[in-house]
Length: 116
Image 1: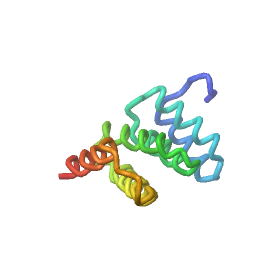
Image 2 (image 1 turned 180 degrees about the horizontal axis):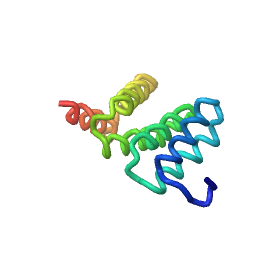
Image 3 (image 1 turned 90 degrees about the horizontal axis):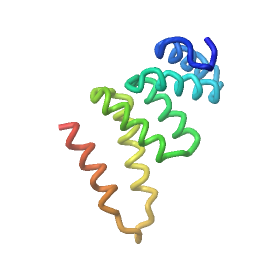
Image 4 (image 1 turned 90 degrees about the vertical axis):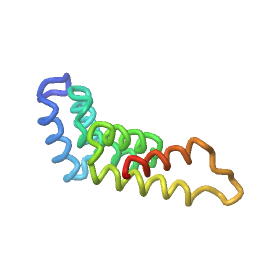
């Protein structure tokens, strides 16, 4: 497969998974991105992109990828767990004097309601 776009989303996902196991993060990111370009509903590729974003400290992108994975596959246990931990950590990292904005509270409430 070449990076010009050939291959299936599943094949690109496997390339990314193999690269991730070998700690070749940039290669994995590119492969998962290609999988999502081919199939925007590939929940596992979205989840892996969230993991990579989180490992790079890009928490906003990580949250977005986890949410996209869950929008496609609401029962994606790993994406839900990662998102819950990410949101909890963001709440813990907020200074005590900093008010919680409605956007954050709404995200947590929305996540809790989808679990019910």
